[in-house]
Length: 443
Image (cartoon, rainbow, N blue to C red; front, side):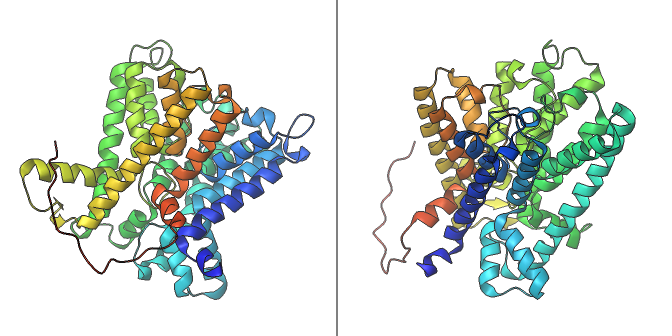
């Protein structure tokens, strides 16, 4: 039993489950609720799962339903979840002992998705440095803007600034405002720092580690870093252009804004769909075309080993490289002058198929237990699985069975379908033989 629990693929999901359980208990305390009585078990469980899995979906109005104590609990939960439970535990061990044992490095490697063992200690130090620096810097900017530009008192400005800075960096999507950041839709000094924090947290710490080591040597960057940066830039630009094209004249979203406001709103939504979860306009009022584009952006998500969710940018690009190589009839899949191993191709395909299969089953169940239309149900399912947190406003309309489905999706999306599948496997073994090869007809 002890040997089973020491396996990283099993320990990571268990650690997240433990954090969710603890958060649920704390949120069920009467002190966590602003009104009379205590939160129900399902409400506390949903909120704790959403926080630990840095999703941001809610079934109650955060600043109204939860007390200051409850909001602090939520903040701690999404900080722990975004930081990575295994990463945080490893960092504590590093700070105490000044060294990392092999077993501890393996745990961190499971959380950071395949870094070389020799890089783990350096990356974990970078995690701590970047987290503290970005969150404090963005909190300071937001605090000053809220105090000087929006008339909030210093205490209120500090609280709101720090909360949104931490929530943005962790791509958590939780807000101390009932309308998220819609009240600041035309304020670039609020939206820009939030976007920067979310982008830094969501790009992935391995990329930040490499950029720190070789900031001006792009030719020496790894395929992972190049793919992540290229994919993120293309998705950000493409998403913003698409939102501008479809929402330019929508009177319920970007229509009333001037050109600069429209551009700001489009860029913000493009960033938000990649896992940030804040919304500056009413997502439920967007055109069907924009919603459809949002599906894809949410599912792809951000960079690996960061605070963003989704199947990850590199997974998407690897599959694009596979398709391109097959179309050209090339025997090898290449990218940036390097050959992509077959194992990586299989892993990318597995991630995509598991994600699509999970979403298909979840969507079918949600349609069975609710009366919501397909486009709404699919949006909520993808948002939960990709740990985005955007909503068309119908999350709290789902029955308990539907909210339970979203809880499972948020957990699977944060921990990872492959990690869960590996953790559930009783054992793995290498066959001492290979079957004869035969080619089925494809297409």
